[in-house]
Image (cartoon, rainbow over all chains, first blue to last red; front, side):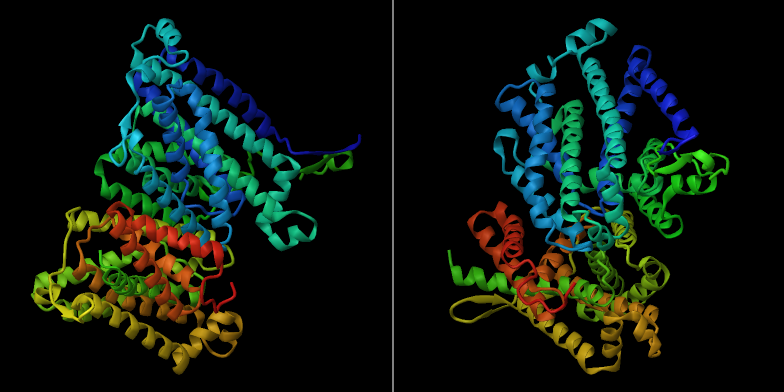
Length: 351
Length: 287
């Protein structure tokens, strides 16, 4: 038997099957789930997308950004702008959400990459503030007070009428279902895309840069180019998620759309508690976060205090998060990226 | 519009930003730690001074003297118990821990003091002014600027003229070799954060007396402080003052043109400097 290089494990094969089943169930969910549950799932899916992209930045790219709210807000505003000013269908305008975020990410990266290490974090924050202040001057979409999606846009999106007829629901509920399906598609594409990226040659280069930038450069990895790839990918995905979030909300304002708490602090918490630098981590993290949110969000500032404290404690005592603890104990990885040599004589001696 | 007056006000405002920035710069210089909770700690200092003033009824300057040792102890303990554990080659843990700390401090203040905006009353000093013929300057802004200069002179003196400063510089250059010479980096770091918190208290005093504050304004102060440090160039406290002045002048000029542009103008000045002088105007450190 010949030697083979593979990344697949038993656990990952099982996880793939379970994942496909889960996706199937989630697609069929609107048929029997109530509107509240669909909204909760939408929240989980969109936060998961944001968390996966932040994890790609910080966990794999070593780029700790505190300014991702810039791209969420831009995504939302690009969609609103296209729908209000040009009368685009909001679903079609989602493409603009990603493109707008991407366009702004280029100058952002140009500035922020001049700042080394920790200063990068605050640099991205400054850019996010600049974007927020500029958008607040944009009177056509409500300036500082914000605006709502016009009725003709929010009531007649692509596919909305079909969903109304299919499930016999009202227009607002149909919009939730549409947004939910789009979020599900975005989430699957995000996780699938990131997993694919990490398994390619680029992913290997990324891991090399993360572990030791100089050693990676010595074997010919272009560390600078990898940073650009990661930053622009994350901006595009975050922008898309932002557009989708505000398509479902139907109302936008600069303070909400560029909120550092909602779109960056929560996301960082999700990634840190679940386990930074893994794909599984944000999935665990978003579930924990959702549970905490649904039970304790009414406590307001005490709840946020506790979130911050939990984040600090995790970082101090279990820096690889809940999934890291689990994975260290069991050796299970659902999205393995390490290449292992199998087959031949190695197959007998278990790794 | 009086341009000279606007610029003079901006220069004095820069003193306040330099005070915000000095503590941040000190901590970064010695242990390469960027404290994302710095702005929130300034706001916390302001609340502490407010508390002392309202309980004892004494002058805010005296209240700040009482707050200083408390803030020093807080900084010392914070560094000992939390931050020393996360320092290392990986920048992620300290960033995430101080970000968590920022959220905690903000919400503790929100819980303890509500979201209402507060102000530390300074009596007649609030409205006192000096007429210099060309411009009329408030006594409070002048005091702020003078304090910023005094703080920088003191910090430079500690840094370059005392044995503690020598230990600071040695630890900053090479903690391992420094520890061979009998310096305990952990203790030095705790001392540095403690001193930074004394500077934070001075910044908090003027923050509280000059304008209204509430628990949510910390992150914006962190951003101004950071911009001043980067514009000035890492490692130079006088550069930080120059950075603060540039932000201050940009903000007052922006506000004079359109009040909505005040903050934006400061940020844009920062981005322009970053564009033409990526290492700042007076860089000393090389990292």
